[in-house]
Length: 237
Image (cartoon, rainbow, N blue to C red; front, side):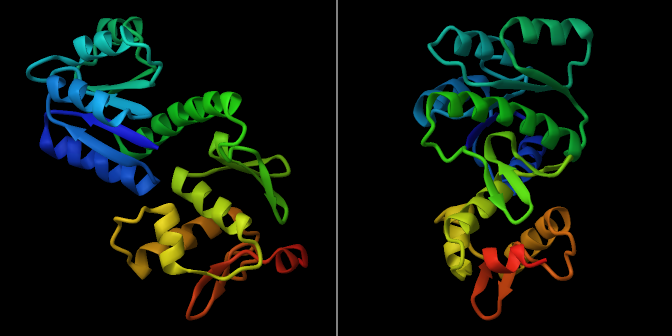
């Protein structure tokens, strides 16, 4: 999924981009409202993160113009304007959510995941071939359009990238996938691979989906190659 980040403060914009890309999103950056509108037409993003106080054209007007177009792309306002009336105006213009600065990483991730779930659910209803169907891996069921997995009554929140990794392993059950294959499918062809990045991501994912992360059954390591989901091993616990 592609997110357009429109924010005139460079540090804030870079911080948002870092958080979003770590979650598995592709990002496009705009430093003002005019650039945001131009990029929106060029890249057709799936979600827009929009600051209010920007040069050229402010965020309210950008949102107004976006909602005048034949598009229902989710808009998330991220702003230092914290008065209730500011939030009301933003929501009345058609924004899907409103996040107030300063904000924490966990809050940004939670809001973005919520918007993404709505976006994926809408897409799944209109396109059943989009790879959104739930699938099982051992004793968990992964629901891609919810960014979640379930083990019985327990709900496990997942990032977009973690869902991609699980889906890739499930599609290639029994096969050892090398690191480049996983990077290309789950990070993108233009990403500079780092073994540490992949290993840390897998480690964090195991902590949430494995019954015993120290002895994983769902995502197994293939030394010298990469990782594999072996259904027989996963079911043998």
